[in-house]
Image (cartoon, one colour):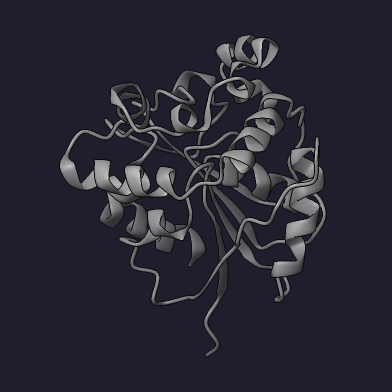
Length: 216
């Protein structure tokens, strides 16, 4: 029997390394690669260009954080079997109010590159990472992120105005997510106790078991 095709989309400032501890050998795994954004491109327009990387019909999309928002936008354009969101948002209404505040100030546009993605106590606290292994993962992906891409992505998220989803969307969220608090999420399908925004590599066995249950 042919393996199911699943497409994983990482979050802002990260790549496939954040999924490294998941055991998904039962599936044919594809990692969506970030491409250079066009100036002032919306999240929806960017997602439309990523569709070229999806080469199988009715895929399972798994999106982490910003990757989940991208998955939602892709799901509005092509047929999918399932869209699984991890530590993400289905629409603009699920993003916290402070996103709008920072969106108006546009502070991220003025920070120098060395500060924009610099790992520090604030970053570690927001992402809920505290031990050495977790900090190394976050530090490495932040270090390798293009500041220009990060600035565009922040703008695109802050200006995201999505109000709809299409297809089967399944939402996994942690109770301790400080970036997108659980209280903002409307009807999450699976709630992970004591898990933060980085639960995909902090609790990989639990997330793996849950993904296998959902994907089938």
